[in-house]
Image 1 (cartoon, rainbow, N blue to C red):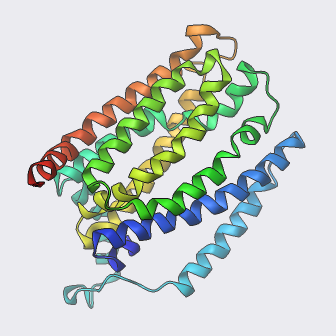
Image 2 (image 1 turned 180 degrees about the horizontal axis):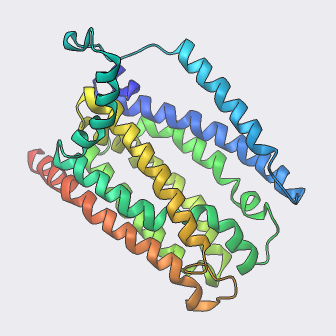
Image 3 (image 1 turned 90 degrees about the horizontal axis):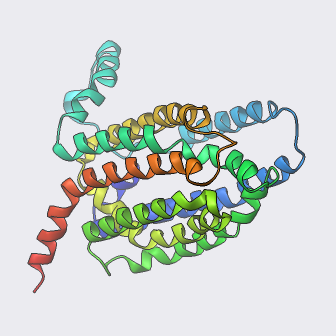
Amino acid sequence: AMLADLTPDMTDRSAALALYGFCNSTTAMFAQLVAIGILRFELRSYTFAWPFLIAVLALDMVYCQRAITETLVVKDHMAGVTLRRKLHNIVTAPIFLATSTPFIKWSIIGSVIGGIAGSGMGPCMNAFTMTAYGWRAGDAQLYTWPARPLDLTLMVLAPFTIGWLSSPTAFLIGVVCSQILGFLRIFCPFSWVFFVMGSYVGPFLRIPGASAAGFTSSLVAPEKQATFNAVGHLIGNVCTSISTYLYSSPLLFRPEATGWAATKPFIICWASGLVSLSISLRFSLPLVLEGWRQKP
């Protein structure tokens, strides 16, 4: 939201969001190496990791509080508002936001459906590789780690591709290609190739993603950017927790399952992605068609 405030131009905004993603990819690349090293010890308990993470997050909060200033201009009518009124606005703002525009409403619905039915697959994949392929703890991270530098390289190149495609078109290409990868992942129980393939093909979606990021942020008013992103993070965290529980339960994940019986969770995940795709097409396809009509 703060990057959107500082970059009113669509091209600059896409580049700024791409740079933000570059920083995330850089830290994730080194973090995965640390994870591989820790998992190789095959410890009985990883409890020590949580206090360390809490300490890092606490330091990060202190840094953000001191180093980052507000980028959104405070309006005059907010001056002198009481603390009680501010707390009331914090509680009610997400509710009003969810019904403010069709894009926001359908985006939230799509996030809930796709999150509950699909986001829990990732945390369960490590256990899946150990039961399906006989891999050791840390092997999944080790075999997919080379995709991190690839992702980082494409992240650097992605801003230079902004303008090749219109933002709505890039967004549409991104979501469709994601569903194709999700379909191929259904065949993971038959071969480890389908598991690894998604990690190495997925980074190429950074190219349309650079333009798509600016497109989605442009559909939300500047004063609603922070609330929209906060609601998105809240939905993502809650849905991931619910989804992880479902996919790690015997209801969906059965270690003894083989063949097509083992594809059940992958099919459910892909089907939920199709629902999210149809919702995305509801607001993106008309904009894509409008952009094509305006071309000479």
